[in-house]
Length: 126
Image: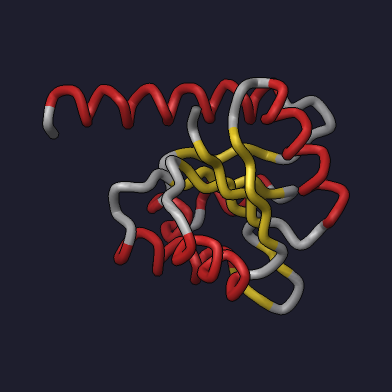
């Protein structure tokens, strides 16, 4: 079972993602800000992080940069209400990008794609 860390400052989004992704067979842990996310990452291993870009007064992009530097083997999918960040060079560090929607099928597909790619890399030793 893959463990996913969901980082989003909206409690209802965390609940929705937790329930929907648990139904898909994932173990989901949530964090509402960057310091809580870092704490959760230090407590255990995760296979993937779903990260919001705008976290109240914090930047998800800053956390993304830290994760790429320190946890380069853990993929990150940015999930934002704003599609304009797709063109931001900093967002290109992420393994995927999904615009938030009430329909989570795109997010679920992206999670499956990124985890399959990670498994393939591990299998081939790349």
